[in-house]
Length: 410
Image 1 (cartoon, rainbow, N blue to C red):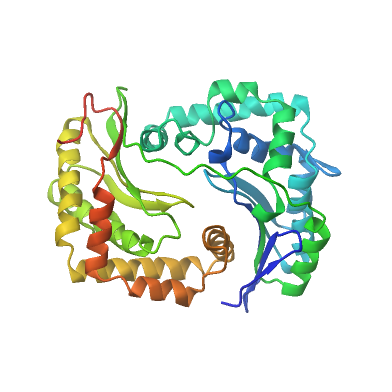
Image 2: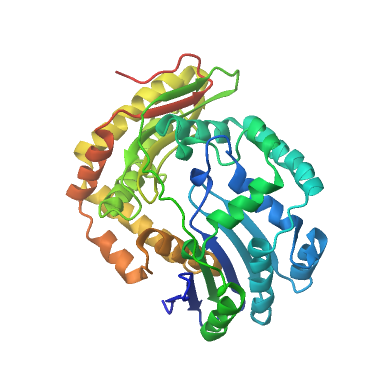
């Protein structure tokens, strides 16, 4: 990689990653702050802010923002996660300055009009309705609630109907002013960009931001509770979750290998035993996600209601057995899959930008591809098994929609 990390005097990170032969550029402003930073009673505020900045910023209203980026064939969008908010653009090389200008306006000069806020509440309530009507999405939020009960990390990113209806423009202004401090921000450009020009744009648009003072985030506690909803659905949607290493923990590569081997592909134990051999599920997989202070390893499935108890019991057995019997061949195949996924993601300008943002957020620096692959290569079957044993040592969290009285095996 040609990526380089710079720091503005105010502490803001700037990453430039020119890619020879690229015909477009990805430019993103990544904030290491998301829904888990919200106060009690303000669930969904980060997500609301992400929506509202597009309703008018700087000299542009919502239509002008959309037209100005699309007049040059580009795109501009955003997302909110539990630990990150991102505003990203995809443009041709000549339009990188426009992309940086638009993104800077979104976070530095949003209008936050009261009438627009009331309209957007209706839009987000409609989005919430889609989630509530989708058992797969809703049960995923329920898993986080069970895993991190009574904590911001366990609350849904979108918030609730009550919190969404209660937001004011003052809430939005306080969030932008208090949370989007330069030491939490990263401007990242990848693809057909000029590194010196990007750094100059960052200095011009963000150099006068004043470093803020934010309270440290309380570490998350894994609670291992259960959440169920006895909805009449065609399928039972359920998730098992265990505490996992933090994203920058030295054992995370081994945890990722274990998860991949257990349920990361069609050759995995979960897929082969639950779907191919027993026909108990169409969708079954495992995943692991690391945050700054904790992580979550989970098995997720959608099964016929009548098959749900057998599928759940078998899944628990498969995962426990894998921690004891994972073999060299499975470990090698999982490592090959993870390496391929990483290399393929870095072929995309957007994928590279997202990768760099996560690296700086978790490690405070850029992790080279070679370093990441070296860590992966160092994982042997013993380390993968040990990671599995460590994750499975505590009480799991459980979430389910449908399946009646579906419960974990003792």
